[in-house]
Length: 90
Image 1 (tube, helix red, strand yellow):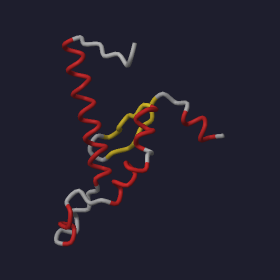
Image 2: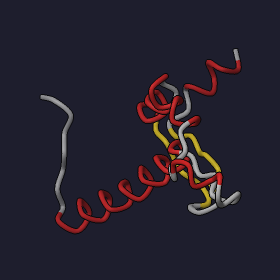
Image 3: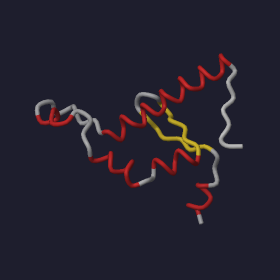
Image 4: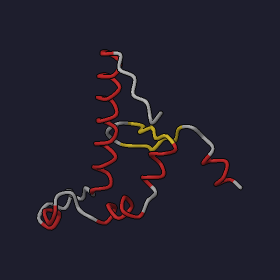
């Protein structure tokens, strides 16, 4: 029951040490919960460098969340200043 109620929220927040909170809408959350995206949790962003530098434990999942947040900010700024409206279909 609780899982159904959580999915009815319009926006979800993920705590991030760099961006504080990353907001996701329901469609973004579906992508985030997909198998290919979850697989990124097990892939190192810096390849084998964590063997030499123990603090270099960044994963592609974390990196992708940060990229999504920054790309969303850029998109919001560009569409706000130019006053572009993008529609999804007819």
